[in-house]
Image (tube, rainbow, N blue to C red; front, side):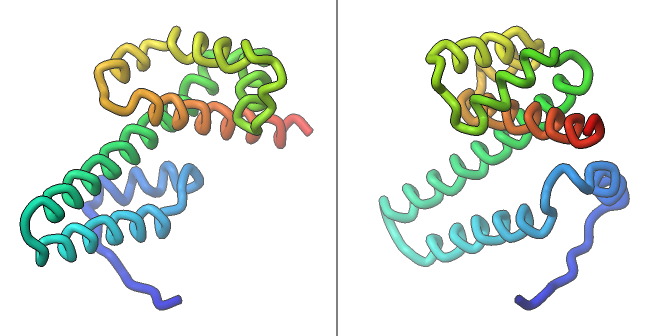
Length: 149
């Protein structure tokens, strides 16, 4: 796969260095470029189809951003507040074990008790924020498990 170099402001580079293990920079850039190329490709078309593609791309971009925000907040919550039981339950649900129907309700209850959830309620993609929060909390828990073992 070919490589390219991008330039970023100094502050962004500091943040990228600080969170270098939190996400795949190359993958995020590829997704952003793909969305931008989709927008430009759609600009060549006329009428309703162009508008729908543009709105779809914008919605996907916002959803991705909301999920990423939820993930960061989930990481922070897990590191500062998450109990062993809450994090273990979140991991079970995250890994697809929904053998107990109330597990997801319990996880959502824990998520909704966070201050960050209040801000997410007004967002269009609350489900994306919750999914991201769950991803972040489970990631922090898995890192803690690795260090414990």
